[in-house]
Image 1 (cartoon, rainbow, N blue to C red):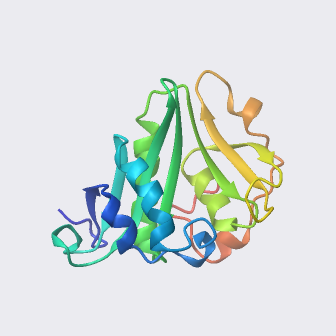
Image 2: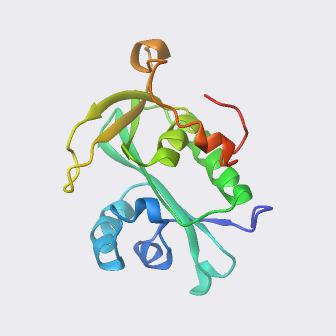
Length: 184
C-alpha cells in the first residue's frame, strides 16, 4: 500500500539499482548502472535491504526513488547504506522516518554509516537517523576525499562516541530538508 507521499516499500532487488536516477551528491559513489550492478548483487543477498518505489515499479514500470539497507559485518555490527534520487520534502521525510524506525528496531551492538566529507545533506541525514559522529577516515575514497563515520553504539552514552562539537551544516535546515525539523 502506498504511503501518502506516493511511495511503496518493496524488498530490494538488484534491478532496482538500474531504476534509480541517483542524486548528484551521490554520483561519485554510484556513477552509472554498470558500477551499481556489482554492489546490488551483494546487497540483495542481505536480509535488511529495501526500496522505496513510485507506483508501478514493482510491475516493471515506474521508478525507484530510494534504496536503503544494512550489510552485516559480523553478528553484532551492521553498516547502513542508502542510494537516493532527488526527493521532495514529503518523500524525504517519509524515507527518513521509515529508515530511522528500522534502525531503532535493530538490536545489534553497532550500526554505522559512512558519508563523504563534502556531502552536507548526507551528514545531516546520518544524524536524523539517530547516528552520532564517530571519526574521520582521511583520504579514504579513490579521489582522495575524506569519509566520516557515524554510528549508534549500544551500551555507551552518546557523549562518549558522538562529540557535540562536530561540524553540522546549518544550510540543511534553512533549505527545509529536515524531515521533522528537530535538529539533533
